[in-house]
Amino acid sequence: MNDIRHISTDELTEFLVQEGEQKFRAKQVYEWLWKRGAGTFAEMTNLSAALRQKLAENFTFQHTEIAAKAVSTDGTQKFIFRLHDGAQVEGVLIPSGGRVTACISSQVGCALHCAFCATGTMGFIRNLHFSEIFDQFMLMDRQARFAYDQNITNIVYMGMGEPLLNYEQVMESVRRITSPAGPGLSPARITLSTVGIVNGIRRLADDGFKPEVAISLHCADELKRRARMPVTEHQPLSQLREALAYLHEKSGKRITIEYLMLKDWNDSVEDARKLFRFCTAFPVKINLIEYNATDSGFQPSPEANMQRFIDFLESKNMIVNVRHSRGKDIDAACGQLVRSANQRP
Ligand code: SF4
Image (tube, rainbow, N blue to C red; front, side, top):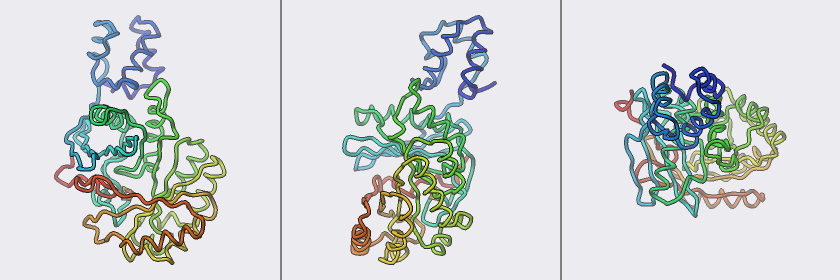
């Protein structure tokens, strides 16, 4: 049997009409699925019992559930989601200054093996379906109302996985989350974070992608970056720069550059100079991210190095923000999301 969320609205309408129902029932079912986040047919109380029965006989629900939750002393919450096949991904809720940001995953594991990222050690297990990405949002939205008395205000595709290597499903999840017939979150409140998949960035530009785009650059020196981020061997900085200039040209967007500050690897003034040169082809905002030590062997950049780095960039009139990681005590901070081998399906 098909999962009801894997069929199109047209297919749903056709099924209902064939069953002798009126077309407007499709809208009601859609709302239950994509606005209210129903997980069972029994919840669809404005449908007749007979229709609910018919739906249950013809379709299934592939459930996503919260398998575990940890709450940080700073209010950040980390969730482990169990997917229908037993695979697990993680998501994080970050309350801050009137906002609640949800960090969501796009793949189970990740194939890209960035040296400073715990997720990369898992390897790639599978892509998430758009309904599984949507589920993370809906489940955390309920938790946000309960914990902080407010809905999720922002989403970052910055959890497990490389979103541009699961392009179709990620795009569909964005469409569902921003749809006025669904949760209706503004695209301006969504950020897709990529390690810099050149073809994917060009595709975003050509597809008129509305949300914000952040690049996990972390280093603007070709050889150093390639050594620690193996995928970049086929995504050289020159091509990435051109793709970002193209994205800016098509969308008018300011690009966010994410830069993990790692001691003695990418935190010298010379590194800042290279970063500045990389960023001259399009407007940027630079987020310097405090690193959380995992087993990677990297250490966080000392305060003095960080300040010299910031001073250089500011002397070039660049917009620089420092991001202090949240949820460190529960391994929810950037680069800490990982399911260990014995937790895999
Ligand atoms: S930083 Fe992102 S792309 Fe790199 S291994 Fe981690 S999840 Fe994958």
